[in-house]
Image (cartoon, rainbow, N blue to C red; front, side):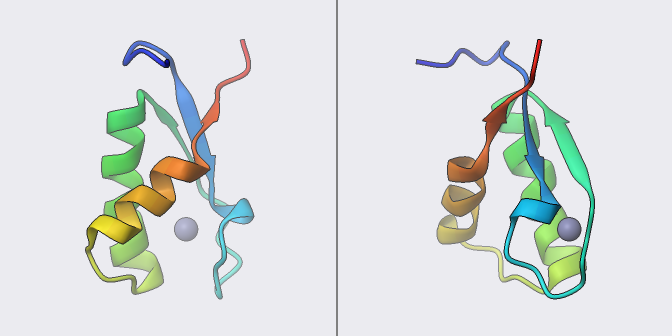
Length: 65
Ligand SMILES: [Zn+2]
């Protein structure tokens, strides 16, 4: 089980998107989910929902050491 001190990232290029976004967000899982959710809403027109947050959480990848 991942701890909150583990850094993870999401890469917008690997998410389904319509605007070829290349943003990469890294930090602790909670930080990344929060920031990526706001980004998805602001830049990708997603609706704020628990589904969105869990989709983003499922896409988290561990930051390479
Ligand atoms: Zn994006």
